[in-house]
Length: 301
Image (cartoon, one colour):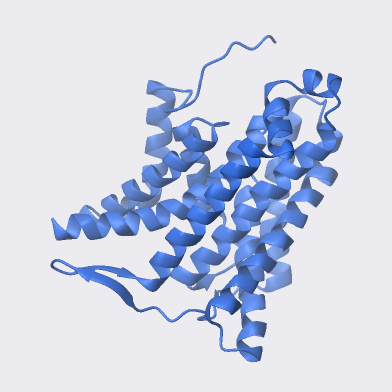
């Protein structure tokens, strides 16, 4: 029983990271009906920016909470700006083009970021600086522990998700995002600046991906330019599992993905870890294509 509880704690920590990435997929799809396959690589950029920012801050100070906060903010700001640039340069010109054009462009942007990252950062793996010393915070039962990094992941993920919830539900920008997700035409008729809201959505989702990149660097210190491929695909599956376009669904889907993956590794074999995501994707598409919290809707073509 203690092993199951420990695996659950580990799975929730990974699931929180998947949820942060999945939120970007689901928000962009909600306002634009676009699967941004470059989103996983934005997460990679967040990890790499966190690595270089952390290296500089470690030399200037001793890390700690202040250093981690600064690294997190820098990574989120850089990724938000990257999301803005990607939307304006790659996706905005294709706004009224067939969706297959935007999908192909998204794959192209993903490849550009991956191999551009290799040219810019180097192909060799890098080890994330130890901004926070990992130590046991809570210990109970037979070998059940929660370490400091897991506590930070839970805390930061919860704060970011609550902040996102507040932005979407309580602010004018959030209300505009919900209106745009309902109808572009109706939103423009009531004076909502469509381009600004879409760009803001990209920036918000990219900032969350940047934060996820830093959290992964803390828990799994090896970072490299191709690290966004599998987590990006798994977060996409998490978004589909919860119901793509549904923000609470992305959160639940991310947690379920993290738990399922950890249970498979803990009780079966790490060989099946990556295959699990695609098994879940096939299963959910066969059983409930709209996802756990998604709604089916008719579309005129």
